[in-house]
Image (cartoon, rainbow, N blue to C red; front, side):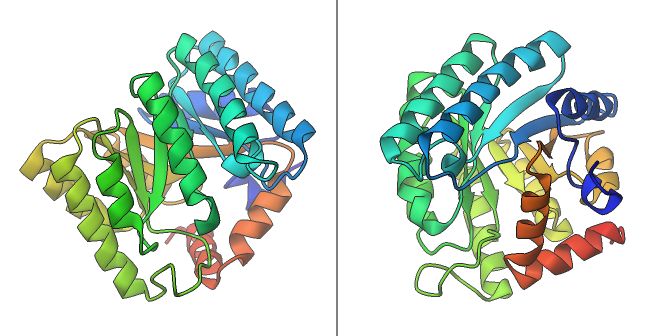
Length: 278
């Protein structure tokens, strides 16, 4: 049984529990991004098993008639085994999802995974004409160049500030610098992208800036936020904009919760503010 402090951020241990949460979100005009918890596998068997679970989840979404898509982590579906294993399993998931018109997001992990993640994303976004999205992180120094590469790829891109504790030679570590890069990258995306922008932020200032950019450029976009964080704001925004909630579920909830809370001091403070409703 998931304790209350974790159940705020995790939708349950089973797909059925997660889909019940999705139904409650849909009732309030919020869509869902479902993520089966699991990452950093270094053997093929668990990576293949989770990839197959994602393929089953596609059918579950279709059968439940809910508004939901998927999000997968590269290290969960084989990147720790090899880039070829990751691409193979991602291809199997995207193939199943495309057959049911279910969108697939590819999460971004630490900076060492960026090249393999972007290569796989571009391959399948082009093959399936935009049925795939990828996450990029504003704190990485390389992100401006990555966005220029992705501007003409027929998929969606989610911009987040970045949760990983990256070294200074590859990432901006000062909060003000990261915020400035986020604003710069967001403006570039609204100006240059035409297939949709995903604003992955709970920051009221960035949310307001996205609204302003949409008014200026007219680019289609959506807000994406985490389960358990500023949910009142999510429901308020859903009255006027497309809003997606990132919904983790599965038996590995303790690892997810503890790792997210401890990998960076900022994450711990962020989680405490969410629990306190701030």
